[in-house]
Length: 294
Image (tube, rainbow, N blue to C red; front, side):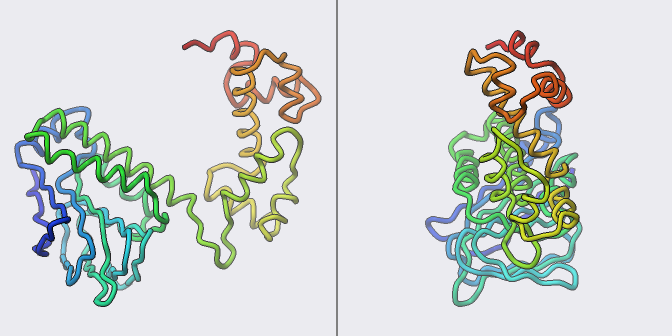
C-alpha cells in the first residue's frame, strides 16, 4: 500500500477544507470491488489561497485541481501554464511538478488526490497526455466536490467512503467528457455545441457536410478530421445518431406510425429509415416500440 501523500502545509482558513482519508479506509476502498479501481486519498477546497504553493519531485499518487477563481501557475517538466478560473490541472503519478497561486489574484481551488487500479486511465482521459485542460466554470462539478465533503460528517463510515469513490469516478468522467467538448474559439478549432445546435435544428430534414463545414468556416476535409477527433464519429454519422435518438423519443412519446416517425426525422422512405435505425439501435423501430418497458 502506497503512503497517502500529505498535501501542502498551507495554513487552512476558516472556510477552507482539507479532508484526508484514514489509512484503514484507504485499505478498505482499495480492497472493495466497487471502489478499488479509483478512490480518494484526500480532497479539499482552498479559497483565495494567498501564498499557496507546492513542489514535488515525484508525486506518489494522482492529483486533480479545479480552479474556480483567481489565477495561478503550473510547471510540469519543461513546460508551464498560466491557470485561471475554469482550468483543470491533472497530474499523474510520478510526474515532477510545481504550482502556486498568483500573488495579486490568488486562486481558489477544489482538489483531490486519488489512486486505484484505473487511476492512470482516468487521468489520461481528462487531459489526453497533458497536465492541463479547460472546461470553464461548471456549477455541477462544484456541487459534486461539495458532496464529497459531506464525508466530514459520516464518522469514517466505510460505506460512505466507498460511495464517495463512486462519486469521484463520476466526477472524473464528467471532467473528461466536458474537456473534450470545451473548445475555446481561437485558430482553427470548432465549436461543437454550435454545430450540434445546427444539427438539432435540422433533425426533421437534411443537412450535408458542406453546410456543416461552411458553418465552421473550414474545408470539408479539415472539418471532418477535427470533428472526428472530438466525437469519434464523422459529422454525418453523428447527425444520423442524433436523428435516431430523436426517433426513439418519438416512438416512446407518441403513437405515430413508423412511417410518420421516419418523415419527422427527415426520411421519406420508411424502409431506408428502418434500416438506418436498426444499424444504429440494433433493432427495428417496431421491435423497439414493442420492447420498451418501465
